[in-house]
Length: 439
Ligand SMILES: [Ca+2]
Image (cartoon, helix red, strand yellow):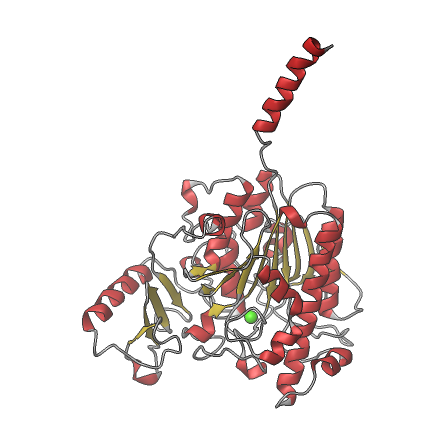
């Protein structure tokens, strides 16, 4: 028998020596809305009270990597999402400001391809649960923009409790059809995400969970408000309770992945769509300003990625990254390549995720929030130019060195005119490539 077995054993040994190609990972994005930079336990300058209320996201961060200098491409909801889904600066296609409420003349331009459009041909099931905010007419809704499955609202926010009176585009749709009111909005989004995971566990999936939490209205569940404890202001207490419900539901979704045996081969990303909204209780310490502005407090966000076996747990990355990098990263992880005609603005973060010693090619990052006369900013290495333009602040460009002054308090424009000139030129070259805002 031994001689007959030998070739089989040799073949087995050969198989063991050459690992099977890894299955493409599931990709799950947990995305919050208007949360403060300091309002998560994994942040370096976390508010201790909020750290206590965010144990699940803190645990996720310990199992993965935290990006200390993560940016969004837009300072408010809709443009930020247009950038991350396309991997392109949204100002290139005129999606520069929030879509006006219930605007029926368009949405994210149909000339643009979104993440789901790219991932579906790679064998991915695609789902969006929660807030859309990228267009109301049918042709602009998620089911027509690369998502097989959509359960959520077209509007940018809604009541957290069942609406007594119908409001346009705020009812939850299930693949285009309105669903009855019922349940707490954040819980419905968490449950909808788990339903998607359970029903798509047999093939790779891309699931984008788009919470409205903790965007206003400040309507926490009474039990969350009680558990949140005492705060200096009622507003901050309600906001904290909303963040608690966000963390609870992120935990629920992570548990679903675990229960279905999928956590090991799933890239989980957590981040937030724009800088914290201080007007509704968010705290951005130590960053200057808030949602809507091009200072760090408007554009720098908490960001975590976990992918067991690929990302070494417990790392913090200081390289500046931007949500425009997500699409190239997801394509890279899924084994795809962006076509040359796509003209993506982001870079794959996979090298950074795989190797702590890796670096990204040097590149400037840009922001503009309100057309050619609106506030604008560029970050290039450690330098940042902010120009509010328009009627604001005397309209002089300001220059900051972020490693020494993350709070953007010391304007170095007069001290470093050459650097100011260099950044102004780069900014002007970028602005020359942009389209006119669509609305
Ligand atoms: Ca937002």
